[in-house]
Image (spheres, rainbow, N blue to C red):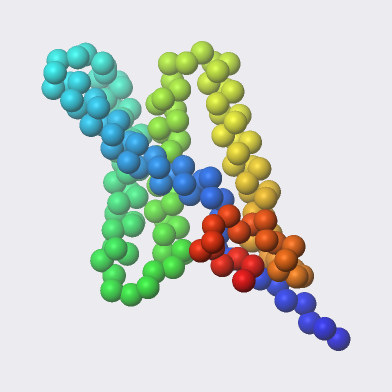
Length: 155
């Protein structure tokens, strides 16, 4: 009898990872933009806006840094599970950035953007579900999951 081989990988949703990672420098540029405008005397932000940036924006970025930084200092190989605590903070940062950018848009346009983001997140989860729940059978049927040459999903 032939045994069933199941492969698992610690690869989650690429859209979530990439959007979370992109939100960190985006947030830094956002803060820099408002600091430069504040220095030049533009009254862009109210005290409530500054508090919102402080509590909903800066704290997740600090949390990401505090969870990620120790692994930069480590003198050994780090794996995906080392980065998962920092991932939560980057996801929160991405949510803040999307909310901040869309907050002044019409509600229907705002909801349209949210629905596109939900669709991308759910669609890519569905596409990559076999990686998380286990790939059974021949590796040739999973070739479509290898987006980049350096990904070793089906090799």
